[in-house]
Structure formats: C-alpha cells, structure tokens
Length: 506
Image 1 (cartoon, rainbow, N blue to C red):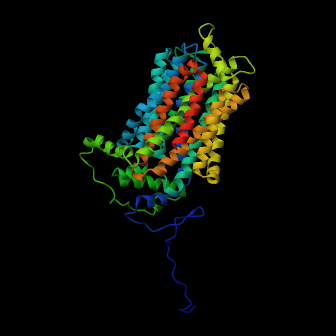
Image 2 (cartoon, rainbow, N blue to C red):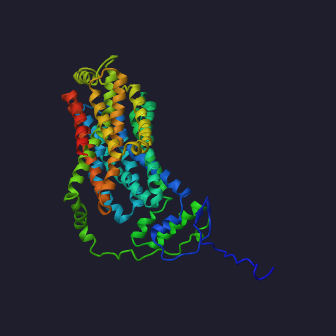
Image 3 (tube, one colour):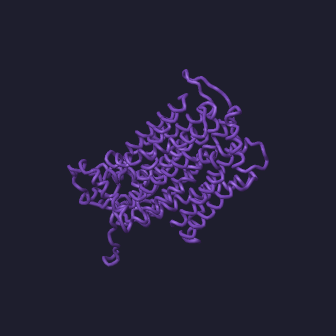
C-alpha cells in the first residue's frame, strides 16, 4: 500500500458521548469537572430504578402511616370509647406531629444528612407505631400517634430531596412522577387490607398482649417503614449533599458506583477523575450562631412585596385544598359507615349522621364496617392514579389555569351535592370526585409555587405553603366531627364555599 493510501491511525480512546443506544464508550478522564456534568455522566439505569423503588416505597410507608387511623376509627369505636370529639382528636394526632416537627427535620437534614435522618426517623416511626397499636387507652394511643406523625414528617418530605439529589435535570421530573405513583398505591392498599382484616372480629394473645382486628391492621401498616430503613442501610448519602458539604471525594465515590451499576462497566471507567472544588464554600465558624438570622433572611422575602401576595395566595389555597383532600378524607370512612348503618335505601348523608348522633348514647356501639367503605376507598386510590395520568394530557389541552379552574369548580359542585342527594351511588360518586380532584389540585399548586417564586426562595416557599396546607388539614380533621354534629348541611356547604374562595384567590 502506498504512503498516500495509508489509513490514519485510530485512537484507542474516542471522545464521544458516554452513552449511546445502551452502550457506554470509554472517554478520556477529566479533572475539576462541574458536579452537574459529572452526575450526568452516570447515566440513567438500574441504580436509578432501584432508588426510585426505594423512595417510592418510602412514600408508600409515609402515607400508609398517616392515613391508617381514619380506617380504624369505626372499628375502634367501642374499644377506645370514641365520641365525635375523641374521633377528631384521634384523626388529627398524626397531622399535629407533622406540622410541629417539619421545620426541625428540614434543619437537621441540612446539617446531618438526608440518609441518616430518614433511617433514624423510620426506625422511630416503627417503634411508636407498634407501641400505639398495643396501647389500650385512648390518650396513650393518641399521644403515640402524634409522636408517630412527628417521626414520619421527616422521611415523607426529605424523600423528595434525597431522590432529587441523585438525578440530573433531564430525568428529575419523570423520576419524581414515577415515585408519586406510590401514593396512589398506598391509598389503594389501606382499604384493601382493611377490607381483609377489619371485617373480622377476633382476639389474639401475643407476648402477653391482646390483639384484635384493628390493632393488627395498625401493626401491619407500621412494617413498610422499617423495611425501607433496612434497604437504605445499603444506599449511600446523596452525592449532591456530600459535594456541597465539602466532601467532593466521597461524592465522587458515589458517582462512580452509580456509573458502574448503570453501565455495567467498572468504577475505574468513570470519565471523571476529580470534581471542581471552586464552588465549595469554606466552613463558616459563625454558622451555628446565625441559624435564626439565616432562617429569617430566607423567609423574610416571602412576606414582603412583591412576593407577599403570592405567598398568601399559595398558603390560603393549600390550606383550603388540604382541608378537603386530607382533613375530610380522615372522616370519610366513618361517614360512609354511618350511611350504611342507617339501613335505608334512600338517605342523605346528613340524615344518616343525624340519626347516628341521636342514638349514640342510647344504643350499643358497633364495630361493624360496611363493605362500601373499603370498596369506595379502593376506587379513590385507583382514581388518584387516573387523575395523575390524565393531568399531563388535559393540562396541555386546556392550559394550566383553565385546567385548575375546571378542577376546582367540579370539586366544589361535587362537595355541595354530597348533602343533597339521597341515592347511595350518587353520594359515593360525589365524595370520590370531591376528595380526589381537590387532592390533585394540591399537586398543581405545588408546581405553580416552584414556577412562580425565584429559585433562591422556591424551596422555602413550597415548605411554607405545605405547612399551611397541613394546618388546614389539622383544623379540618379536628373540628369536622363536632361541626357535622352541630349542623351537617352548613358544614358541608362551608367546605364547598371554601373551594370557591380558593378558586377566587387564584
């Protein structure tokens, strides 16, 4: 072959994209790489899927713990001697813990790490959940459920932060949506397990403790959390947290592990030799002394123009939506059970509740829970899944504002009609629509908050709005029983008007 026809030498290392049609091509090692670029080099594969599953089960565990009490209220009525006031205290106990402890867990996760907080709190939640399930007294049960809510507040919120810090921008939204799907599974699991256990009356002796149907139900719902804690023992701290905490070497080790798991190549093949350390701040010796000042400086802009109006609107809207989607949801099993106990084919919700309140002191309490309670809650869980699936399509067709307004109007009308119709199938349909559609609006508003507020305060704005929402849920679950006993029609209409007011706030 002549000199002119010789082929040019082929370099053994090609400077091509690291991931192409499922194959990973070797790339030259780079130094002082930006963290986001290094994270993107890890790709998306088996490691991310495992992480999504673990965080999804964590969300499942958090929702199961927080909402399980609503299903045992009818079954525990005799065992805990529950009246309307005690039912309100019991259903609100978890949310009291959530509201009070959330800021503390956020602060601790920033200084101690996401993973450590989640594992510790899941273990504490398991202990308090098991203790509550075997506690015989109402006040002991309520106090332990409050502590359980306080412990679960951290993992339920920090889960999103922990997952997001493993993901690069292009995969974050899709991965988060996949994780939220587990909330729908939790809302389907609770009535399914309740249908299996709460319909049976039995008593078991275990280690000197007497367990009945609803206590077994509470015990089983405490187990997913400890399973997630064990799984997280094999997972690392988030690389982004490690990096911005001044530990780039540890962050790089996590990135190498992610790369090896996703690509099937060895950790040595990761094309990043070191991370850029220029953006890392030196430790501030005065940081501990300025915690409250820093917190004030971060929250302050939210309550001053021009953000004040948006902050108040977001808090008001979330408080109203949570009052229905969470607060009234706690009472839903008991309300449907009262309608079933009426024994009438045609009866309004208010007629059934009024009859139940009038005979509460005269007749023996009943632990029977009607099948419809469980069937309809399974429908709610499934309908949540459908709503989240349809959200993307309808939002694109109508636009976010029109879609939100349509959802609020439908939810408000459905809520108002709950106390008007007397056919059980219509009561069921309107209850399901009111609870699920208002619940979906919570997520819509969350997206708005992140979009409207500047990046440097968006996280705090979302935290403040969700805290207001949880307060709304707490007040709703606490007073709903007393209000329904006072005047059922007025109470339900107030819930409907509340949604119209939130629509006006938008």
